[in-house]
Length: 378
Image (cartoon, rainbow, N blue to C red; front, top):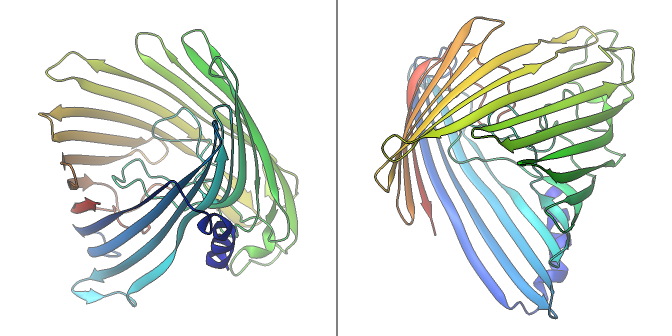
């Protein structure tokens, strides 16, 4: 159904004679070896072909087409034995039509909608699931209509409507009801030495979509409202804050109001070619949905990034979970050339991973191990 909807949205643009047509793609292969008790060996290959086209509509307007597929194969092993079957699929990854001028744009179709100022833990990750440890920054999109208007002086206004997204997005505990749209918007304005923004979103969550619902949970839909605030400033050091507040008006969900916030700073030291340090603290209030309990989170992240020459980069990332008093460690050496990227990643984590939204398999970075990723772009 999703693939058919994407094709239908793109068909009118395909029939036009485009001024510029480009086909590119990204192929990647990754393997993980670890001592995780759930899967100690994993491999995945993925190909993301992308077709883009641009048609000039007069002096200031353009019509753009963006279509991309996600084709992948993956397997997991434990003690030399394959777990389950081979995971494979070919599906629409992006598929949108965009009309734009210097001050306005409208994009319809399967797309990525992302905003906010935080670098690691993002309370406003409402529509995507990007893991900051993932070098590929892979994230599924949403079916939406997105409107943006740019005001002189870097201010801009967003408005969006979503429909047909039946999986939980971002931090959502429950998916959206199939028969209702989601609506929201955002205003972003410059301030001295930075910018601030406020965001809002409304939807109806589907309690009936909970798999194997426990007794007493029942079904039905729940109205949900979200508001967000974020800002970033250049104060000699980079500084940011990002926060969200969610209200779900149903006695089966407690508390009715839940908050999350990230506060962070970064700074580049004049050491060699520049050592960039980052620190970010994140707090997320948990919830209970009937007898299902989602715990509170309080995590601090520390990061260091250092370029070695023109093609190599060394990066380290440390999470500390204050609730469980556990540390999560991640070190990456990256080599980048015109078409190739190589990532050698070492990790040393507890066997129980943090409850963070992610696109990789749930246990992929559990325990201690190493990951190799090879990426080719054309």
